Amino acid sequence: MSFGIMEVLLICLALMSIGLILTLLRLFLGPTAPDRVVALDTMNTIVVCLMVGLGAYYLEVVLIDIAIVYALLSFVSTLFIARYMERTKEKEVE
Image 1: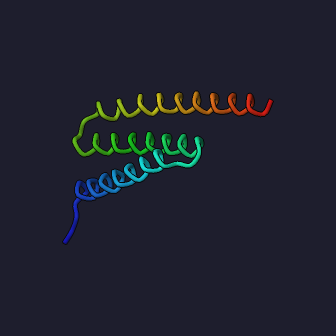
Image 2: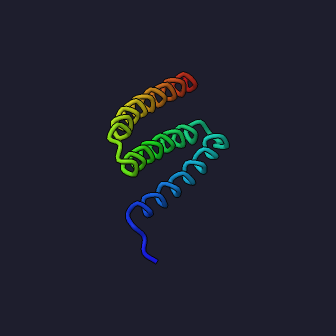
Image 3: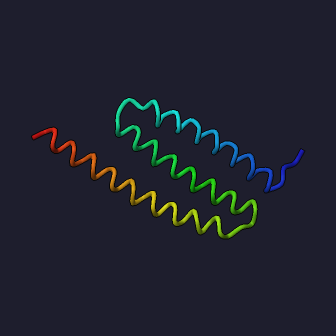
């Protein structure tokens, strides 16, 4: 039984979807706020990978463009969340 590249791509996308579900569990069950932030950032990375994979599977360049914009917005939002958490921690210390 030999697999073509498209079948391997679908298997990889399915495995990433399972990883996304596991990360979603960490997001809801994470014991601390930093754990949740890391889980959210990991979810965003997996979503970008899924978009690129689906763009390759369906041969749609627009999905890859959307993935690039989503990755940029995800990065900026993670920076804002990290800065907010840092400032609230500084206020707790004072």
